[in-house]
Length: 342
Figure 1 (cartoon, one colour):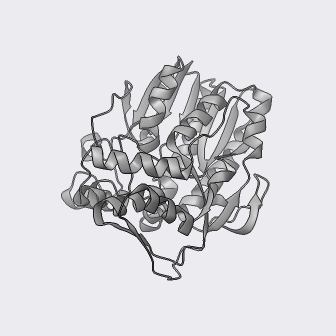
Figure 2 (cartoon, rainbow, N blue to C red):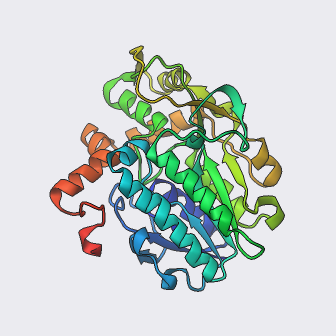
Figure 3 (cartoon, helix red, strand yellow):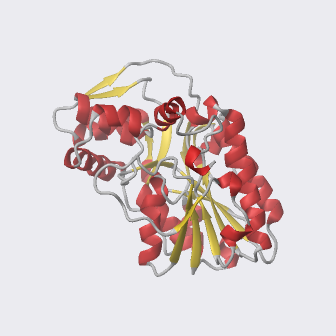
């Protein structure tokens, strides 16, 4: 299958591209290259494709493609809150436009990377895909809007699928340090402290980047009736953990690290536990395998092996700080288009 992978040079795309290729698919990458240089360790081998901003995609970019996997987005809540209009322009409007182009081109399978953050402050019970959506950030709100619009586009010839990923973790050659497990392990390795800036009680569902790649791979070729216009939570119940439990796993993975829980009540109201039964039923070939413990060990070993520095951790691998630097340096415009692509 010929697959267009947007965000191919991002944190998840860099892990997913070789998984798709190893399964026999031809991968065409599409990326604005905003984070192409955010590499820790040996540089990855990227698929051939297009260096283009998602907002500038045209019919020529989807021509001859059998399926689209759409990962590209401004990909976390602080970024969304910094520039909410850009978040809607990129994450919402450009995503729906891409889907319309794909449908017009006769592409039948469109896999959309949504998020479990759409559940917001859902409380203690396990939430299924039928739970009320309570997005509390522009990022999560944009994901809800895309799902709604793609559902309207769905018909007998066009099957969008909404893969609601739990919070990602794990090593990628294009690292992100601003997601919870990756961040806590980095602080532990660099400072010897596992710092939790809250009381540690909020619930988070986590999923490894490789498990996300495997879920998309399974959804790519699943029978239409199993996935058509459906939302599927991506992860496993074992990884529904509190922030304090995540921190405890980090302490175990990094010898000598000590846990510091500040007890503050932060501004983030999200707390939710997720049911992943639907994806196991719909995609029997998929099974999430990576536990939080596995990921903490993997990350600690990778950070030490590749010589992670505090400067890179804070400035290169933290999305908000990195884009702020690029804006100041003038290598991206105020609307986050790389100047080389303007």
